[in-house]
Length: 200
Image (tube, rainbow, N blue to C red; front, top):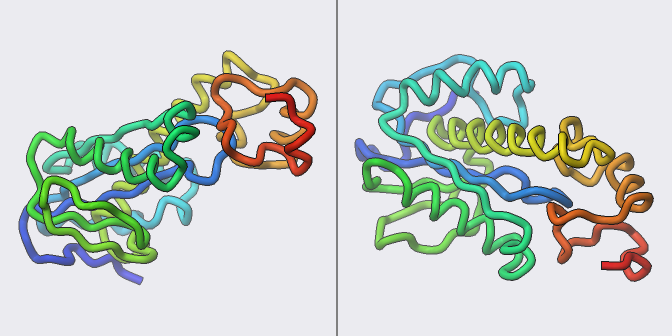
C-alpha cells in the first residue's frame, strides 16, 4: 500500500512514533519528523516491515530531506515511575518539543496521545504503514534506539542486546535468570515468568 503524504494538508504536519515499548531493558524512544511536501521514497514503510539494512539506508535520507526531525529517549527509571504508556507519550512530546520548527498539526501512530502545546493532532492506528511522516519517525525511533542498545551491549554483553535489543527473547530472559538485572532493566516489567522469585 502506498503511503499517504499528509493527513491535514497543512505544510508543517509532524509525524511521531515510538520504538521499544515492549522491551524489558533500555529506553522507549520516540521520533518526530516533518517532511517536505512531495517527499517520496519507495522503500519507506513501517520500520517493523523493513530489514535493519533498509532502515539504516533510510535514516540519512530521512534526516537529509526532512524539514526538521528529532528523537528522545525515556529511560527505565522514568518508565518505572510513570508507566510505559505515559513514558511513550512523554518521549513523543520531547521529540516534538525539540524540533527546530513548531508543527501546525501532529499525526501519531496508535490510539493514545495527550495534547501538546494546543497543537491539533490525530491518532492513527497503524499510522506507520499509512502516512509517510509517521513511517519516517518509526524508522528514526527504531534506528536511534537500536544504536543505543548496541552501545550498552558493550557494557553487559551477556544479555546480547546488540541482537535482541532488549526485547523479551528466551535468551534475554535466561540471561536475567542467570545474571540478575542491570540498571538498564525495567523493574516495573514482568522480567521473568516467575517474577515473584526475582530479587529486585
